[in-house]
Length: 461
Image (cartoon, rainbow, N blue to C red; front, side, top):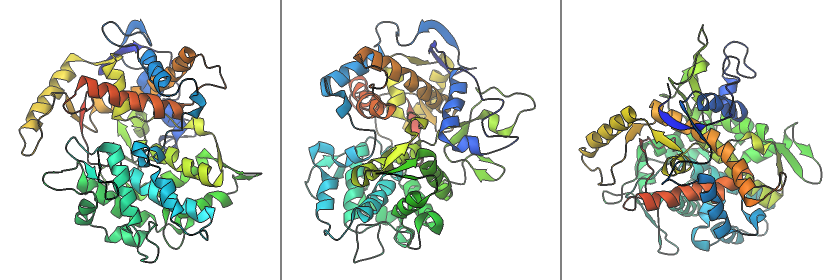
């Protein structure tokens, strides 16, 4: 039985009893983006329904598609094609300052475009992996401008300045790179200093972030993907030489090829506590009691895959490869909307989803219990759950489903014809992510936090 009440949907329940590419027990469908969308569709269709159809939530709530349309009209009309694809690059440029371009301008002209792209992949990968929710109290003061930044943008500016200072490099003659030996030596204290963490400026999940970078150092020993010098950027060479890459006027890389590098190459970074099947960690994939299981039940049938950080990586890494080397990617529509609290928070704050009474009471009790712990900040009261709670798993799953449906409705409201409409990545960048943040700021002005609080270890959100 679902934990949320929601509007009706046409998303089907296909692929649950027989996931694609999965004779018997196979981890492959739970580790790839397209079956991830189908599996979330299965969760999406098991929840209890009402007779109201998307996107018309009852008064006094907001029509989410119309709300998104107003944001696009405010910020981009009539030049909707200028909306950038969702990615980390925009976070680095917070405040209108082109920090990535300014950094590249300092590199000698002898650094060719391939090496420039490798360096950006180095930077973007580390920055995305550190881009979990920072909490309500943390901020970062830029050493270049003296301005303070918070949340994703604060983490982006912090990691960029750490990158330029050589924090992630073991080569003193080349600070602007990331390599395994440097990450292996990076301690919690080093990371805390780089992020300016202190008792008065705490960040959520510091130890989890440091652990992620330490395990990344081990993952980079895979020379097939990351070369002999253990750099994330060396995946570029692997991708360009891969037999599936089409060499024409510009290289065309299939997104599944990039996806396999990220899923297989980074598999060792996930905590050992994650869901495993047949001894293999699935990363950001979680059991959910709402999922139907066909007798005899298979281990994968109740597991919902998300791979949020991996998808965020895929979206983000495609941008510098496209901008600097003009690489094109085939099959980007295989990636899903990101199941994170800004996109999902939008669905709750607009009234599209409502937490059921029993779980609301349970979440509020967990919030009160957590508030009694030392060092917990005062904030608006919201229900609280751990990352593996069915409420969070289900919330993330229906977020994926609704984002797909919202895309079609938003394009219809904008009058954009099929073929000329916004892509999912554009909707995420300029609409649901931004809109989720803006509506949270209005709904909870003291903290600007999402409508559900998540206890995370810094490796999921």
